[in-house]
Length: 276
Image 1 (tube, one colour):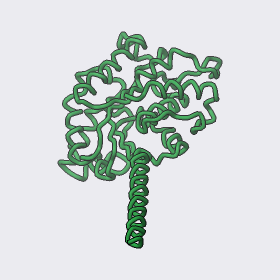
Image 2 (tube, rainbow, N blue to C red):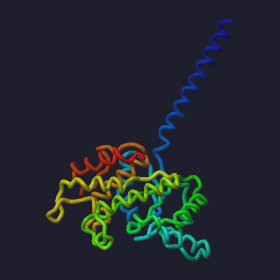
Image 3 (cartoon, one colour):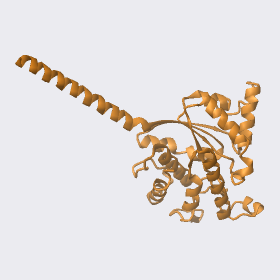
Image 4 (spheres, rainbow, N blue to C red):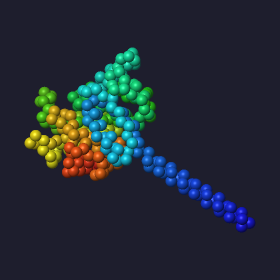
């Protein structure tokens, strides 16, 4: 009888140990699910700005990021959609990206996220988004069915860009229109969005500590619309925080061109505002 009880105790103990081990492994697997992401962006030079330091930031934070950019400089949603349909009509055409056509890139990986955006000079004009955005979205759902579609909210221009005068806009006015247009578009489609435009407008209110050509450096490049290296680092932090749902730490990657004071300011602004 005692032998039977002993055997029961042993069996129960083994079963409990197996349960705890399996449960712990499952918990660990769940906790680490977000450590690996595959992200494709359909964009232009602004998505290139956003991607510049993102891989280094992710790696320094212990994340595995597969990142691809389907971009052409100055490319609008209309142009992406046009090349996409060219390829569908004739596979010898529309292969305008590194890696071939947009359809090929959508099929290249089992993407977790595909981002879309409008070209900057049309980003504040709602009438330029459709029907092209819907055509692209339809192909994403067809060829990358497991991917979440996320809107990359781009940013308005800085005060030294000549186009603002042509459009009769102030930097603040353009930023407000860009932000509003993207938010309404994302809400209409029920997509999450990366609030880079909102954060650029906020960060641009505070001069950076370093000097460039005798003036305080900014998050804008000298052309007044692309991101400077400070801006690219800021964008990398914004995207990291959004994608992995955690703050960028002080020990994360930082380019040498960004000093500690500015790096801290940009990380903190990204960390507190990007979990949309």
